[in-house]
Image (cartoon, rainbow, N blue to C red):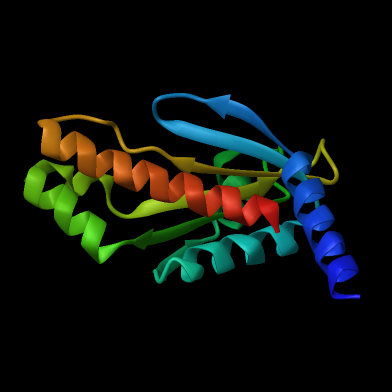
Length: 160
């Protein structure tokens, strides 16, 4: 029975992981799409962040803000059905990054975003802003660790 339960759990992980697809990879952004419900994927992101021992400083409801302010700007198009941005930092990695180069403060807070668009029911987009790998060797190493952390968080959130 335990073996069967383990197989079911592993099959669930495999199907979740296979359900996500990389749709954009640039020097400044990684973006995936997964089939699912916005609320569930958002909760998975929150869990993946806190599982790393990190505290979420803010969840910016950017999609709601754009919807709310659209009429004042003369806009009629709904961009996002839902759209939130998680803001957080790692004290250890941020210190390492800043000690290597104080100008790296520009890369804090780290962000992971999640959104849906009206034209694509069932698709949830998840991504993160990548730090620019810049500066001396120490700075570059610290920034790569942050990029790796963000990749881990997003990958974990998409595999649940």
